[in-house]
Length: 308
Image (cartoon, rainbow, N blue to C red; front, side, top):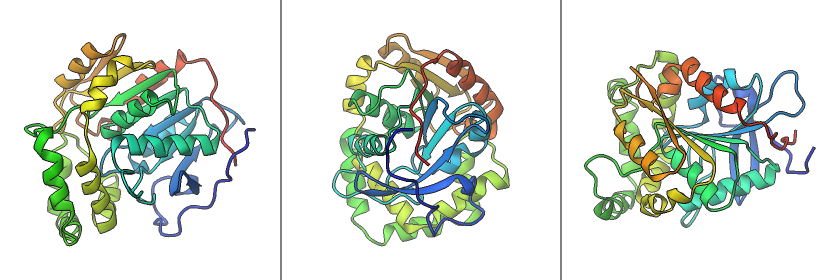
């Protein structure tokens, strides 16, 4: 068992009915207080480690159903990203892509964990790639779930970040966004726009997240700090095998972008999921889990255990 900081109890503010709350911990790492969920196989003291990174505006709850399947054979690390959910918001450039990768690298170092596979949804895929490219992590594979590799449709990176920064400077804006997005009809439209069909139980955590001005503020600040151009420049040097899982009904990210990334990254593969949207792993966890388990079968090297 490697040395590392002990895992504390779940954050006090975490709702008692939060998905997988019994696996939630708090942990100091890299100057941040993290909310981290750790799941281990029931019959194995040590198992290969998988790091799962959610997308912008979500939290570790996004992997609730998928994790229930994967945890039968692998140790899962599922943090709330910096500023998201119940993880502390970083200062300075901590919400930029390199900043988030740096913080996650510190989290892995504190845990003494070396994942064999990174799974990133949407922006989480870009963060996972940056984590590898900057030398914070050296997994055998990287699985992108509807990865966000390019600026949003119709958005020019040249003006988007400055405009977003102007919006973020308004202290009332997060409260307005939280008030608007927490309205059931507005939240339903937001989720429906992803092309995914979520039941009420799956939508409930998002309602809690978007009603938090602190969460919304960090999301807006992250968008203001986001610059994907250096990542796109560096992607051809990505060493872990990249698998691009694409929901063909994704209403958030154009499915053809995965094929553009495939052309940039030698040896990468695209896996299509017909009829599924941007939140494919939430609406059809069994289908995504099958793909993940097929990939994990080929990753024989064990990861480091995680301290209790």
